Amino acid sequence: MYSWSTELKRTGRALNAGLFAGAMITTAVLCHSLETMCATTTEDKDIIKPKELADLTKWEKFWEQWKSYMGRHRGASKCPLVYVFRDHQLVDPAIHLLNYNDHDKCVINTTSLTGPWFELDNQRVYKEFKALVLKGPRWSFVKAYDRTKNGRGAVLALRRQCEGTSVVQSRKASAYAKIVSARYSCQKRTFTFDNYVEAHQEAHNTLADLDEPVPETKKVTDFLAGITDSRFSNAKDLILGDVQKLQNFEVCQQYLNTLVYNKTTQEKHERQISGLDHQRDGGKSRRLSDSSPNKAGKNNGLTARTYTRDEWAKLSKEEREKIKELRKQQKTRNQGTTARNASAIQMEDEEEDDDSSYSDTSVVSEGEDKVGNISSVNKDDGMTGSPTRHSDRTYHN
Image (cartoon, rainbow, N blue to C red; front, side):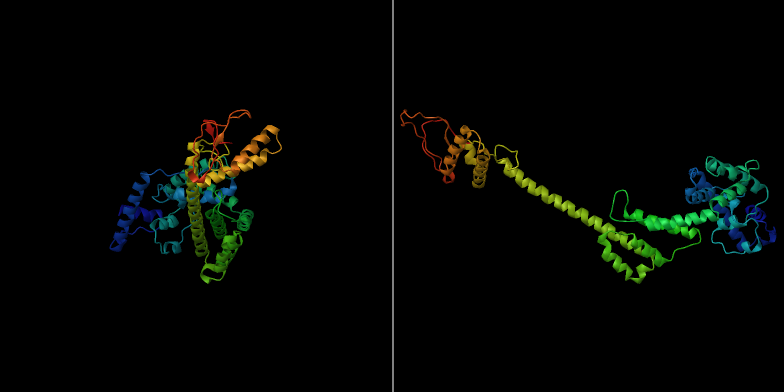
């Protein structure tokens, strides 16, 4: 009953103890419980202050943060401190008769701006507000209220300067310019489709706050005009032909946002599959290269070098043909060099035509007896060879 009676006094209503009965008691008990619960909740949490107002272009965001900050603080009036700088000063009977779904909203609109509770709350608001605008560009308008510590006067004075006619026109022009200049060409790390949607939504919010809301159809057409990604041509045509999406900006942007997400996911999936296929192909090449002695090189490790009998026997038919091809290419590159290199190339060509797997590296003089030890030729893979007189046999380069 005490809480109920003091609220009547703070809101300028007549105190009549006979009215405290029936439904009024139930309402008073509920309101008192909510006030106690709110006080306990705010004590357990640290309320973050808004950042200092250093740039007037950020006034809109600062104002919303300031109202939210003051709305979580309760003063001597047991009411959120935003009541101190509400728009209306006097409370007429019509305001009391409004249907309030929220008790806090009721006391914010009806608490009297006179009395000892208001004096304490008004000074507290000034101290909080001064700390946030002291270094800002409009401090001179607030300083006029520094001597009286008039928080209501200081807050409303700065608001008038930041929301005057010239400022309103400038904010409108800035919002329209943001809509026109916003472009979405593709999904980037620094600018995603969500950033594009946010740019349009912020501009629409600003225009709505300035009592100049944009029609839904114009929101959608402006939104589609800024999308230059050719992949969404069909989607844009679909929206223009769908009345539900054309007349509802939220439905339109959610539809395109889903499309962007699905396309990005699909492209990422395709890149992963392509990478796996590339790894498989690379694994086959590496396994083929590992079968040769030399594992490095762009020809699967095969070169035109000289191979021993054992090395040659381990090679497949395809690898032997590749070596022969490399030798022919090397022979072509070496043409036009010294006579010594030309003689060596001619000897290799003769051996290659004979399809010999190996040959002697020794030089036999014309007068030497041609009878010697002859070893059998490796007939693997259909190779033939001529007997030689030297036991040290190597495959010729």
